[in-house]
Image (cartoon, rainbow, N blue to C red; front, side, top):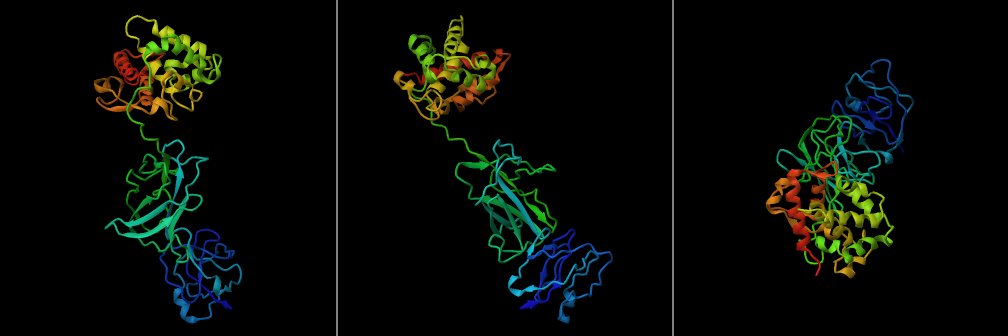
Length: 395
């Protein structure tokens, strides 16, 4: 059975129009629609008579022809089976966004970053907090709220007014990227705050896909707790024959370069000269640091780094350090915490606060310039890493 249609919308470019049967409703001025079957339309050379019926046989539907100066004209006759009828908003009568994996956690969607399916997006009335509708992100991370009751994720037709979108059901191990609001023109920014909701916005039939987007960062693992025996060793251990033998045994033996490269890559100001160097050179550099007179701050920091490497099952060649009394775990000593006491402010951290050993090693490297520790941080770093190495000393 064929059903006649009436024109009930207008568009600004090809292939964005909706045709409905005799149940067509009057639409807002800016409504634009796309067809189920792509019927080619083209710009009209003149205004079309607002009373023209476009093949509609029922005179009672004349009143539903939109009164606008931007109508299109037919490129051919158009009838489709009634069973194919449905209408979705293509541009104006909706709002939309995307959820993606923000691999570098900068809040900006960049090339190669993938969308996240299955995230629940709730549209709330911003005036009273009422839940208006719920959508779920598609395979590419996109979502849309628009008219089309046959679309499971779009159960309502957005009306002008204040809305707020909130994002729930994140994949395990992820949290929201840093918020960027207002978004920067020309890019997709994560506009969601720490509470999981984007700021309220006013929907006025203007299509804007920049206001409601969410980047997701992989959450760091929680700290593994404070230092305990077996997590570290004093500088005396790394100076004696046992500590020197352990350094030279990492990752296959004295000529292995993974340790030196790891130290250089992570703490370049302090240990950049060790990139690509074998374990024998790393061991010798520790002896040099240990041999200085006065505070042995460089040796204390390097001892903390060596313990972090030795106790990580993914770095130090498996469980080799366990034979010397170290406790081995995937994250190693770098995940353990230490309270910096009154020495935090001197290195740019808060006093009387616990930080992971990895964070404190990064802070030490940040307080270095040209391979030398900044004088104002020298004593504080000596105190902190002496405390670290003593608190978790092997027994």
